[in-house]
Image (tube, rainbow, N blue to C red; front, top):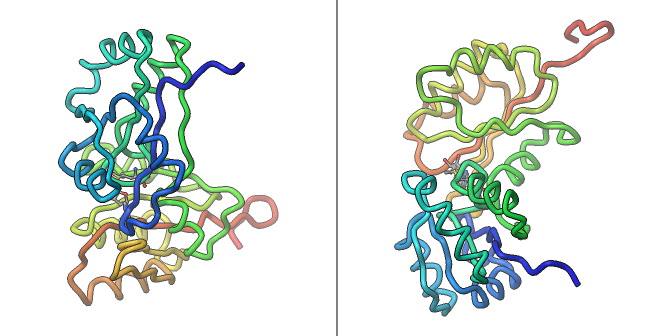
Length: 234
Ligand code: SAM
C-alpha cells in the first residue's frame, strides 16, 4: 500500500477555465485545505467549480514562516492542495520550499500534470524542443547582464517569462547578447481571447512589438546557439 499523499500541487488554468482537469477538480474537492497564492483569485475559480473548501494564503511573503506549521498539520493527517494564481505551482511561483519541507519530513507530495505557460509557448515556437532550458524571469535589474552573459554559449532552446512592459527591453538585450538574427518566438495571452504567437528573428520581433502597445502575459522562446563542426557557429 503506497504512502497516502499529504500535499497535492494542483495546476490551474492560465486563461481558459476549461483547461482545469477532471482530476484537479476531484483533488480540490477531496482535500482538507487549499493553500492559495491569492485567496481572492482562487475563490473565484472555486466558485466557478462549485467547490467550497477552507483556504489559507501561501505566498512569497509568508511561505517561510508558515512552513513548520503546515508540515505539522500534514503530519497530524491533514491533506492539502497548493494552487497558484495560474498554471503549475512552484513554476515561477511559490511551492518549492513547501515541497522540500514535505520531502524532508517523509510526507508524500504529488504534482498533478496540467496547465503551465512554458510548454505551449515552446511547442508553438517551432524551435527545437528535444532539449530546452527554462530560465523563468530574468532578474529585473541587478544580475540581468550576468545571467544573459552566462547563456551566450547555450545551445538548447531557452525559455523566459516576461512582463509586457519589459518585453521590448528584453528583446533588445537578447538581440545584443545572442545576435539580432537569432530565431525566437513570443507567445502572448496563451489560451485567452487575444492569444498570439509571433515567430521570427529577434530583430523582426522587436519591429513587430515596437509598433503596438504590448499587453497581457508573455513567454519569450529563443533558439540556442547553432553548433557547427568543432563548435563553430553555422
Ligand atoms: N506558474 C505559472 C506557470 O506554470 O506557467 C507561471 C507563473 S508566473 C508568476 C507568471 C508568468 O507566466 C507571466 O508573467 C508570463 O510570463 C507567464 N504566463 C502565465 N500565463 C500566461 C499566458 N496565458 N500567456 C503567456 N504567458 C503566461
